[in-house]
Image (cartoon, rainbow, N blue to C red; front, side, top):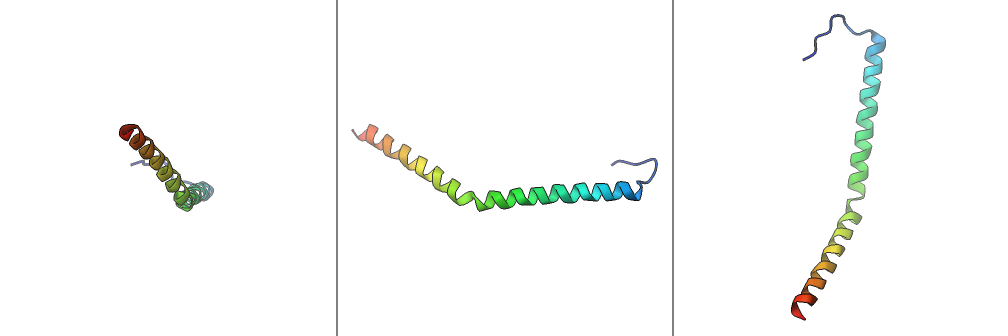
Amino acid sequence: MVLWSYPPTPRQLAVTVCFFVTGASLFAVGVHLSFANIGPQQARAKARSDVIKDRLRKMLDG
């Protein structure tokens, strides 16, 4: 825990709050975009997996 020798000024508190809100909002936007794009990413991963499985089956069966 950090103990300050003097209390922060109102301006310093305002800047700290602004930075915190900005960081939290950027994090929230990143989470939103991650969840919004998860469907296409899963579809691409499944398609790659299916192609590899098909090739392995052809190699092992033939």
